[in-house]
Amino acid sequence: MAGVDSTAVLTAVQSLLRIVRDVARTSGVGFSGEFKRDCTDLSRRVTLLSHLLEEIRDFKGELKLFDSSSWLSDLAVGLQAAKKLLIIAGNFDSNVSPDEAAMKIAAQFHGVTWKLEKALANLPYDHFDISEEVQEQVDLVRGQLRRARERYGIPLISTSDKDVHPVETTININHQEAETKVETASKENLSIGYNQNETVYQLETSKNSSETSSLLDENKKLDAPAIPVDFLCPISLELMRDPVIVSTGQTYERSYIQRWIDCGNTTCPKTQQKLQNITLTPNYVLRSLITQWCINHNMEQPNSLTNRRLKRSDGSFRDVSEDIEAIEILIRNLSSQSIEERRSALTEIRSLSKRSTDNRILLAEAGAIPILVSLLTSDDNMTQENAVTSILNLSIYENNKGLIMLANVVPSIVQLLRVGTMETRENAAATLFSLSLANENKIIIGASGAIPELVHLLENGSNRGKKDAATALFNLCIYQGNKGRAVRAGIIPVLLRMLSDSSSCMVDESLTILSILASHQEAKSAIVKASTIPLLIDLTRTGPPRNKENATSILLSLCKRDKDNLDCISRLGAVIPLTELAKNGSERAKRKATSLLEHLQRFQHA
Image (cartoon, rainbow, N blue to C red; front, side, top):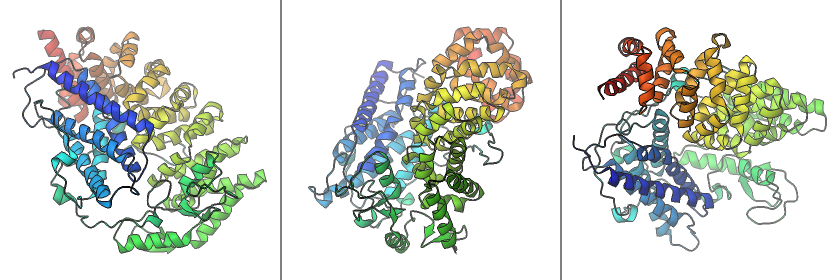
């Protein structure tokens, strides 16, 4: 097909990168007002698209003719609209603005979210040779946008295109059907059980299954009611799930007011009065009112605990009053002056958190998480070990992950990785993996200094500790920004030593992590410099199916746009095992082997 003006495309992508970076800077300053949460979520999702645009900017291949329904134009419209909306909504004050203005902004959030989701559905990944990790990141963002749009429902007022979307750019780009795939080596292959006496985790392959369908068909919430102001936490402006009363008589969501206090604040956020004490008293009356309101308006309830009754999977309820009372006694004992009493309570909480989801819900509802986090810095090794293991078990319940992160757990976990006992370090690594399953947490954990400590555990830990560290590192390195941190922390030499040592029982894990790091330029150079290509080719011949897949994936990353490496694998006889994999390998191995053979064929013709 005819080529296009690559300069125009590059200019457009640079323009979009500037918009994304402007949004990131705006987010760094922070938002306030009625739409604080909406702005924060939207800006975070936009910022995550920077890696996609950087890879398109750095693409060196031939640009093909684009059709008029340009995905790049759609993306430009969505990003420009997002930037404009964040400026307007970022400091919106409902006290000085009419209700109509708030309604209009709410409708614009729906429109912008839909526009971005639609643009991301049509990305021609293959054309721009986008790495699998960035594809996965974009798919995750798209999934978040879809869920956000569904929460917004259909706007109650109509907005014209000029209200929601600024002037569109005029670049024509070829539309190709984008295959939605989250198939990184780890998600299919890295399934590691840790802490034999605790919980076993399983990474699951997830795929965004359907294309964007009619807006009217997907949104039924035409008459979504306004949440009463008294039901919203004054700090987060979200519907409260665990309202508690402070000494001034004001009510807050427990996790937010606890974090306020833990940061050294001694005043009430709403009244600015000095807090006479830091006791947080559950507001059971308000919790009951919120629950009843959710039921009456057919809204998802903030939690499955209603009037001390816990909802079963079949929709019925069981009374948990006695369980709650016993748990509240245990939590009070965590603050006992007696170390034996604290140890006993903590041991029981660890056991409860291991047994069932119901216990994890009740422990979190009773306020166990902030206290457990505070015990991570105890001078007593047994206390540290039981506290971090309890947090690990509580994090299995998805809704608890956010509460644990709000309690500022990561710095204490990193410290345990440095100085804890071996079992404590193992459980700390497992906890970081569990928390990093939430995409936004990958960024926070990666920036915390955890990665060098995990690399050290990967190199020097027990067998179980190495597996815990490998799983955590893999999951963190799915996020593009953490790959450089891992490489600079010395992960490549550690992985290559494990890969060449067949007795290390870490070959699978090493290949899996290398397969997602190999697209990073520093990692690629280190892998090639260590003369690893012959070993990888040998694994494509003789390794188990998973190892063949990952070895082929690594070779593909090393050889893309690299004539020297293509020449190397050609001379070393890679064509025969790759051809065999292309015919008889797993689906993923077939894709990788076929793509690498095509690169080899083009290289030989050239």
